[in-house]
Length: 376
Image: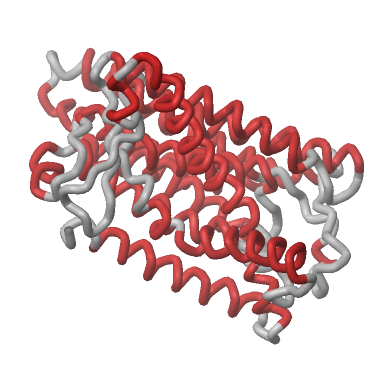
């Protein structure tokens, strides 16, 4: 909106308005807008959530956290608003990448909102069934995939993905050997959509599982979204993309503004979610942010690198998968409790220590991810 007004309309008549055409300038303002919007609206939202008695119910088996029962939840609504509004203000709204990324945020956020609302209505910690939640995530992933295929048909999206450390190996998600004959088209598209479901649903669920301690998930999102901001800028910059041998995606530069808004909104929400938390993000925030992060990774062809950028999220998800598999197959548990952060709590680590150390690990893994761009 402001891009159109201050750059496209004003710049021809007022030279200094060229600043509003620079992605870096608009990203900085989008980040600050998201940060201050989140901080400014936070007290009002927390007060409204208390008025509507939208409080968090704590699992009985999570010892030491019962005192948090009743803390307002669904604060993720604040995050979503603080991402969408700055993006609408500062991004080029004629860019398809921006709308696909926002759809990823809003669609997965809507699933989380439905889940949170169900929990509040039933006055317990269980909302949607796992099967119903996953089915909705599959639908959202397929819709994102259809948008990507539409963009690909117009030459605006590349289906070959980058692999860390392997410069010449760039597998095509629409497996080219399957596209050699019309008879094999269904296999190519089935693989494409299956891959999207794994990335998007996996990313959203990983963030959701990590959201169990005050500030843990949102602090890691500040780090991950910051790393994604750098990646989207590099992918959309011709010289940097050529130098680092990244997929050249001119339109992806506008995603820098979206990721910058995610970083600012996450930082602003951390102001109220830091230990002891005044509000929880709930599934609306966790699923929305995870879905958005996965969507951006797919758009800029860095799905593999997402494993490192969101490394702690992946560890949390895998701890649950391994715990469930081990108990079903061997009737034994690997961890004292899953997700992983609760395991360390039961080992005697204070909540604040778990959070800080997981943040440090997340930062190390994000920095490692960025170093792999040249180590290929």
